[in-house]
Structure formats: structure tokens, C-alpha cells
Image (cartoon, rainbow, N blue to C red; front, top):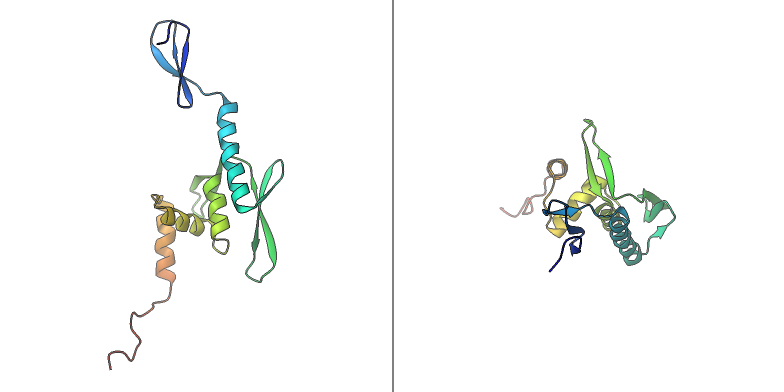
Length: 150
């Protein structure tokens, strides 16, 4: 039981008593949110053996020609992808890193779509378009050999 002026934690927010006696959720301190975010990033870095600096997370990968390359991602909560028609969408950095590690040979939008399908997450409309375009551009593969019906 909380009295006047006492606080009770509720998830990331705090329930507190206002002067009027009404209960409301106070804002979460930025340091708390950043610590959760950095813990998630540290887990991904540790799990995949990634490199990091103060500002970047570095994902090593092999290019199509076999040479070793590195992708640099700023340590931010989200990454904005701008599409050719000037639309943009923000994606969580954790998802972007996971997609880049799992599918390094694909474009980022294709890798995110593949990751979300693998995890069973809902695809955003722009990612659904990526999958549709990918399926339409793939060559037709017959289910049976051409001489199977003869």
C-alpha cells in the first residue's frame, strides 16, 4: 500500500501520486531506457562475436567476390531506411544487426524481411513489397522435369 508521496514501480514507468491525488505514470529516466538498450546490444555483440567502438558496432562479412568487408552501424536505437520513392521507415538496431549477421549476402530490406518471416513477426508493407518483387523476379522453377509427362 502506498501513501501520499510514495512511489510504486510499474514496469519501466513509475506510478506516483500527484498533488491532486490521481495516479499517473511518470516518465522513465533516459538512463534506464539506455541501459536496457545497451544490454540488448551487448547481448547481440557477444552472441555473434561482433566488434564495437564507442560509436559503432562493426559486422564483418564476406563480399560476393570473397573479400572480407565490414559494415558499420551507429549505436542508435533505430536505423532509418529511405526507399527510392522517398518513403522512410525506422527499424530497431537489434533487428538490423541480426538480419545482417544471418543474411549478409542480401540487401538490408530483403534480410529484414527474411528475418521477420523466420521469427514469425508481421511484415511491414514495404517489406511485403520486397518479398513480392523478389518472388516475381525469380525464374520459374517447374515442379516436375520437362520430360516427366512423356
